[in-house]
Image (cartoon, rainbow, N blue to C red; front, side, top):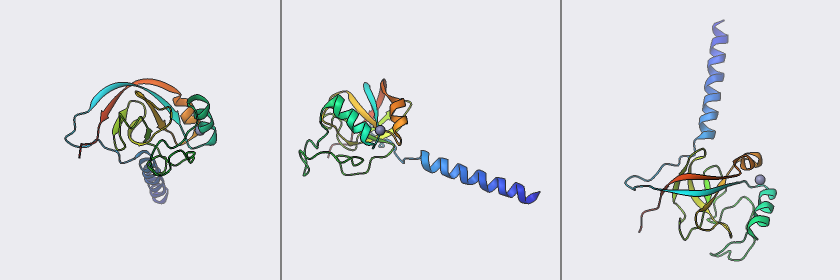
Length: 153
Ligand SMILES: [Zn+2]
């Protein structure tokens, strides 16, 4: 009997640890920066070829707009800043929201701008999702986003 209780305890602990690890992206807004709120159009994407096909069809070819890989086709799953796409990765118009901009998107959570896309312009951002169905489920939403721009150097 005692043993069963202990086993249940361990299982619960493991489940909680996994949930926490999966849900925790360690993204927090920078201290001392006042956020601005803006109504943005958000779309979901993931690393699958279909989403890229979808993005190509909707926005034109996905290529690096600048940097050492300028003009090269964008690698699936790798962001423009060179990091791997993960939950919390946001693609934005970096002339407006530079790499490192922290955003809070209701229904999505905290994210950081680490990617860009040829047709991600102005007040349109792309939210990275772990799976294709999650990206599709997100679809296209117009939401009030909290934005912490990186400190000017
Ligand atoms: Zn996809």
